[in-house]
Amino acid sequence: MELLNRRKALASSALILLPAMAGIALWNRLPGGNGPEKLAFCLGTPAAMLATHWLCLWLTFRTNRQNGQSKKALELVYWLLPCVSLFCSAGTCAVALDVKLGWERLVPASLGLMFLVIGNYMPKMKQNPTLGIRLPWTLANEENWARTHRAGGRMWVAGGLVLLVFCLLPETAMIAGMLAVIAVLAVAPCVYSYRLYRAQVQNGSWNATLRRSKADRMVAAAVLAILAAAAVGTFVLLFTGDIRYTVGQSALTIQASYWPDAKVDYVDVESVEYAEGVPAGSRTNGFGSPRLSMGAFRNDVFGDYTRYAYTGCEACIVLQVKGKTMVLSAADESETKALYEALLNKTRG
Image (cartoon, rainbow, N blue to C red; front, side, top):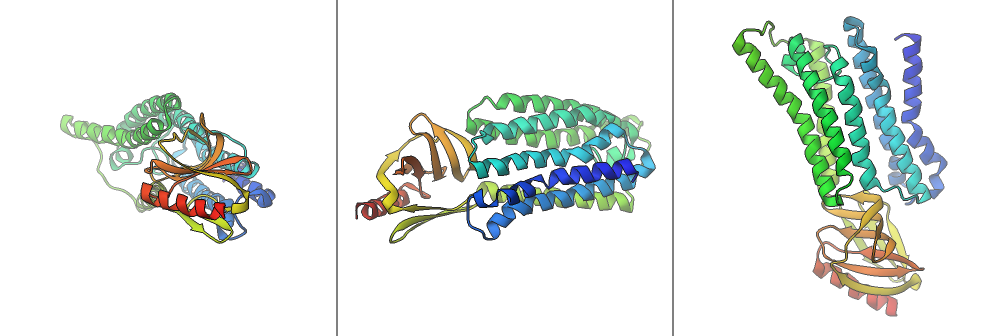
């Protein structure tokens, strides 16, 4: 790489490591103990991002020597992951400082902006095996590449605008719409490209063979591995995880997947109530999936409160702890009722 490229690579790598730096600086203020979970929270994601960033840089510049890729398109390689890292850094600081950022709105808004930017740059990408929509027929035919990226760019810009509008929807509809839009934006350009390839073959304008070099296959394998890991990770986050309640002699211990554990001393509990059908409200900081709903929330009933709950359970336990509200639920109504009775006996004693 040229000296300027090295400087950009180092600067972008430093930005990627910002969440780790923020986590170390705010170590004592982060929730949870000092074990491996906190270490993974601070260092795991930045390290994975940095490795992915350098892999993308290496693959891009390895082929860029041959095809003279657009400088504007190359800027995406330098700064896309660093921007994601800045977003994660803000999240690290928010968790440590208990700042309510309203993540349920920020995530689709950030994705919408990302799709807008990438969609704008797509038509400027020259044919290459590392950047853009890398399919056998786009890599083999320059016309297919150009038309696919023009159409894909328009789709991604439109999808980005739709995601920004989805930020105004209720949370459940917003999440479902966001996942649907992402799926469409991933599949639609590929379908368009394949149909264009079939049309080119039928009208006789196809003038290439679908052969890929060893480098192309290596890049495709790396991309597929990253996408597979991302898909598996997304599935695990969305559809697994548990909340374990341990009713001890002097305190309730809450062990939660994907979110810091908590401990409630019975002497600090001011009241225990059983309720049903209480709306969760909006999440201002925390973790949410079709299975679990945890973190800092706000609704019209409690105002700001803390939640550890299963999304499919209508029943909940409302604790008042040192003037603050905590809402808990088990996997179903019967388990939640049993937990309520156990807590009621402990707090009465």
